[in-house]
Structure formats: structure tokens, C-alpha cells
Image 1: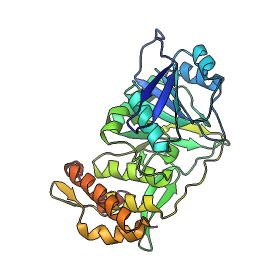
Image 2 (image 1 turned 90 degrees about the vertical axis):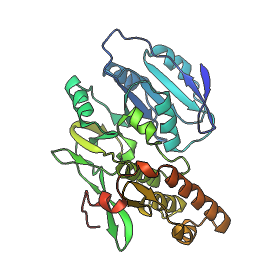
Image 3 (image 1 turned 30 degrees about the vertical axis):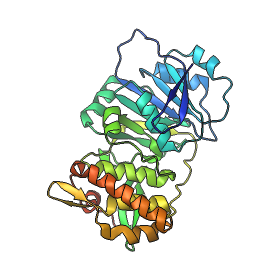
Image 4 (image 1 turned 120 degrees about the vertical axis):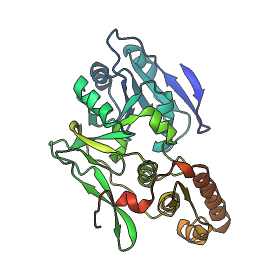
Length: 314
């Protein structure tokens, strides 16, 4: 057992090791996020190891888990990440991605039924050359889940529209319920999920929108089918401070020639929209404006061009 400090200034403990299987390393690992109502069982982790993943990382919450060391001793390629204090889901994924060794990481939840991935399917994921490739999600009856997300405007407000996967490759604004095969290096270079946000909905939208603004895409591979055994909890779409942060970082940014900028004229609107109060609102605005300036040459387009990829009328 070893304790490693994370970049989120929270400590986490890693339990388990990855032993060589003697089989060719296909360069794809699995990251399992535990849902509050559904913990991952030993037989399911054994099945993941047998499915051809070079490593399996399991993220556990900060509650005591007394059987982890015993379970880790029974598994050959599974490690458990136990956080010393509660972290939002984006911070958990960011930390696990830094801990992962495989170049491709399939992020799933504990209620996902993940079938073995053929060599051809793994190769197809590589060929798409994306920051994240999302699967076609199915419910326990085998019906398609509307898991492809499109941005739209409704009454002047930003909204998202869920759609069912098509038979051909299409794109999603972000990986629904965080489920998808991530290119680890590109994910980390994108700065991953914004850990200053605590609302998973706006955190996911911010990651996806930023990916497109910076020239990435998130395609869906229909042949990659994942069954979810329980209903995915509904998103919290409250227009809270995280919405204001997302709006400022993505929708308010203007792109011209080869760089982006965030006008000081957005300050009062952000302070009003965020509900943070004057002092905190100004501080947060300045932080985000500095972030946009530091990353200004990474932008390749603005929000309007991104939304034109879908042309969905909300």
C-alpha cells in the first residue's frame, strides 16, 4: 500500500499492483467509477481483467473499505484508488488518469456491463484519433440510451439535447455519464475536467466544449456497445455558479485570427450570473480571464462554430 499526494492537494492511497499477464499489451486500460448505489464486485473486476485490459483502476469514495487489500491480493492487474477526503467526479478522473499507465483508458461506471473488446475494435478506436471515443449505450432491456449530447439555444439560453446513437459514426459534445475511451495524453494536455466546478453536468459540458474549441472531437463508435444495468441519474441543470464559469470560459470567449480573448466587459454579467457576490465574483472573473489569456493560442474556433457542427434547434 502506498500513499501518493495528488495535484488536487488531496491525498489518495493506491492499493494493489499490476503483474505481467504474459499476453500482448494492447495499450488499453479500464477505469471504474463507483456509483453510490452500486459498488463493483470481485467477479466483475475479474471479468474486466479477462477482457484484455492491461490494467484496471477502481476509484473508491472516502468511506472505509475494509476488504480492499484482500480483494487486491486476488486480482493480478487491478489497483484501487482510495481518496482521503471527498472529491468531485472530475477531480477523481483527473487523478486516476495521472495514475494510469495505458495510453487509452476506458472510463466506465460500476453498473456498466463491459464486453471483451476485439483487437479490431481497439484498432478502430485508435484510428478515430480523438481525445475521447464514446460508446453506444444500451439499457438493461437492450434499448438505445439517448447518450449523444448536442448543444443548442432555447430562448436565448444554452441547453443540451440528448440523442440516440446512429448506425454511423457521429459526435457528442461530451462523454455522457463520463463513459468513454479516453486518449490519456491528450486528456491530460487538455487539463482534463475543471476541478473548480462541483456540478458534474457543467463540469462535463465545460470539458467537452473546451475540447472542441481547442480542435478536438468526441466521436461515437456504434460498434462499441455498453449495457448499463441501472438508470443513469438525471443531470442537475441548475444555472448555478458552475454554469457561469462554463459560460465565461467557453461561450463568452471571442476567437480572432489565431488566438482567443475574454473581454473585461463580461465582468458585470459574470458577477450577476454567478451569485458569488462582488468580491468573490471579481476574483473568479480575473482568474478565468488569466486562464483564457494563458491558453489563448490553443483555441482554434469559437462557440458559434462549435454549435454549427450539430445545427440542433432547441
